[in-house]
Length: 113
Image (cartoon, rainbow, N blue to C red; front, side, top):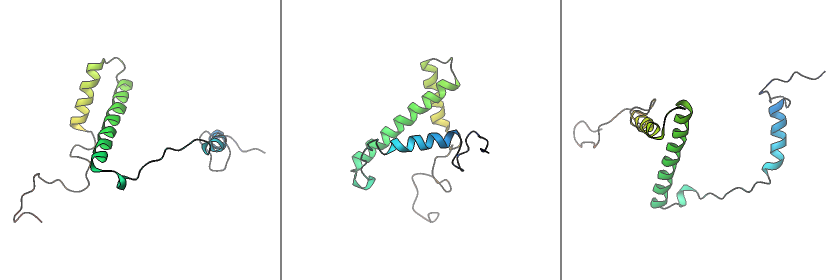
């Protein structure tokens, strides 16, 4: 008796995802992988350029997301939505850092730990 096919089930090695995984894994070895320099080998200028490229890419991805969620919006409306998102950052209103908020620049003195 063959087990029932459950969409997404591949832990037992059967189902549509498992079959696709077996097919794809044969070809993965044939795909050339790009060489990536470790971040420790990059100059500060290269690190800055990379971070700015990543920021631009993130903005492009968010633009596409906004276009999907607001299909009738024009380019200017999408740009305004992107600017609003960058200003508010839902879920990261106070930044991405871990820990408590601190004032910047920090003052040296009695209240500085």
